[in-house]
Length: 201
Image (tube, rainbow, N blue to C red; front, side, top):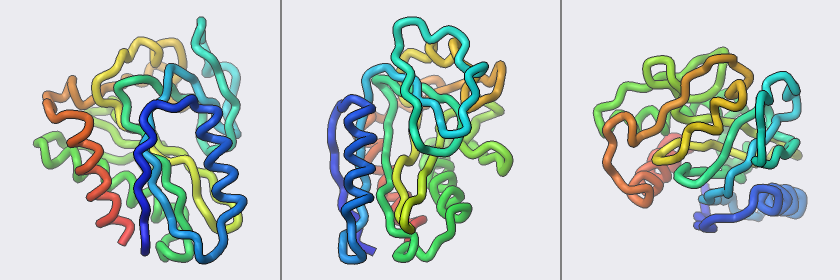
């Protein structure tokens, strides 16, 4: 499977989401799949089934209702966001298997640094000793995926206390810095993309 990487720097969430929709709507069976690496200014995003009670005190951080699965999460500087604009036919994976491939990519990345992480079949994402270190959310349209994953690296975690992260009250959130991982964000991006390429076949 051809997989093009695009490193977009920091981009507003709404414009990036619209660009993902446009890419997905316009692609054909000949369009190569892409990985978009991006960072967002502070923003809360609410999934399609998102419930208002999980948004506790947004304050001055904007809230955007989006079309991915899952509940509410936070994006901000110091977090690696990778959007997977894939053809499910080319990957040969169903949606559940694709989510597992994303989770295992993150778990293997953290294992390289001696950090034991796990997935939860009832709550997609990656956890270290019960604390969430990475969130996942996808949308599938016409056999193509968009949205993706977010790995907390070195960020202000306080905004997570103003929501029930991914719909779970009192869920603790962690990041690679707090797990003793000193690698730069650029290094982690490179290694995570290598893991994704491996697990996506």
